[in-house]
Image 1: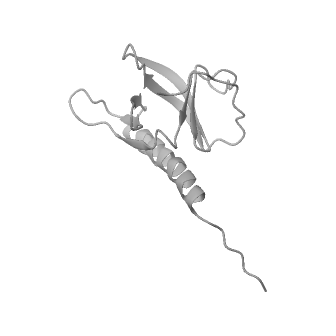
Image 2: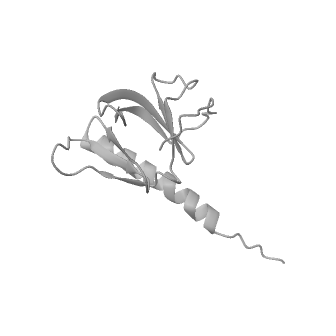
Length: 125
């Protein structure tokens, strides 16, 4: 489950930000949220550029699968962010915007995996 015990994040240089509709995990209704991708975290806020109180935080080391939603009831621009135990649905304004979010989320999730598993070797002269 996404984090709800939330502290004020330090947003400095987001890789991507913009409005998405996020499906409520309980009621299954969509709510417009300002989403911010920084490092390996995806933050959800009620208002644009208001970084004080995130409504949810998704750790992309856990929510590491992003893919276009398929099947009955899927809408244009709809995609899924999932972890081994949870899945969340987002709706972008267009198919292209959805693809861009998926691309950035995958890059953020994979960059942390690579950096933690890659060792740095030094050369001596």
